Length: 320
Image (cartoon, rainbow, N blue to C red; front, top):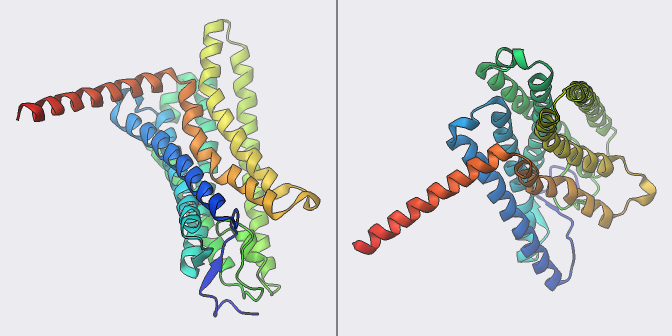
């Protein structure tokens, strides 16, 4: 038995105890991580470099890619390092930082997806007011509000969670530090305070979800009234990537936290946690780039420019 003052590190859940499978986990996560870095990095670079993509929709997409990069970088590298070095340990400070950053980025990403649904609603249902309602200042304010919401929520949860006395050991049933796993180690009724904060956060999440649903109800009603089939197809192509990302994000988190206790097990919890913390950041760039011709054209132009510069530099070096 120990209390929180004597805990200097936590023990994370490992995917396997077999050395060969640990190395397989390392290489698998490395591949996913590099794919996420490449996909999100290309989206960020393309949007930043192409003037034609300096619009509200792509500004919010750039922020979403930044959040995805931060989210996967918070959990995956530490898990990879533990598998590579055959250890489970994470320091107390490192655990607190991981919990804070992950909560910040997850809440900010959900807030950004809510803002993006409003962007799609205005673009399709109120196109004549788009420039007024979503000017550059308004976009910056909405993006800042999403980041600030994540920061404040994470700060409250981290301060409250790590103020609890912990007397049930230091082993976590998760491959990264997460609030519910820390609460399981608490031996005080004070954890009810954190549960109350979680309930308030869940209510805010539900309100955002209702806002997204209502936005898309209005969007689909407006799209179905478009007489031209080409116009309807273009409107759907603008909305479907965002809707797919929202569905992936919400469904994996809901399944993880609302599944029945009777089907819960450490192995299943581990797989589900990967689905909502690792898969979306890696898959989101693919979802957005598949049906977005503007983004694909800008990316192709960027790659062609980089390739041409590489050839010129190589030729210049050869002549020297």
